[in-house]
Length: 142
Image 1 (cartoon, rainbow, N blue to C red):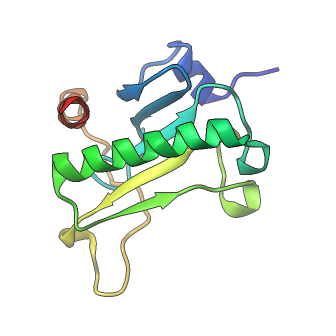
Image 2 (cartoon, rainbow, N blue to C red):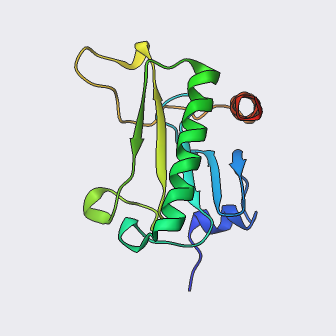
Image 3 (tube, one colour):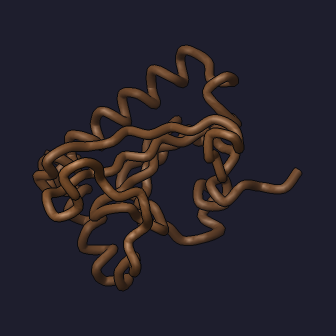
């Protein structure tokens, strides 16, 4: 069976800006961020969607989602945070490995009604992404 892009990231076959890792969970910056600090949290074990998620792994994932969310808040002081999780192609799931999007929201993205859902035009240079990664990690270490 072909590996998903997330499995390749877990196995370090392709690079990613990893901000958090433990035995069960990996969190890394989205390659096509919707905002500064947009991070994905995934189980290391391949689980296609929430319907296949067991309670124990779910608890570990949610603990990591909470931990990384707080680090994003402390690192960037967003006005809000979307936690998004899609299941199936009809729900816009594009990588069939369970994942949670943590999307910080800022004043300059708000149009009075909504926040934008389009990726930023440029995901940033490697140096800029590394700076964001390190800022998140610093807050996780506090």
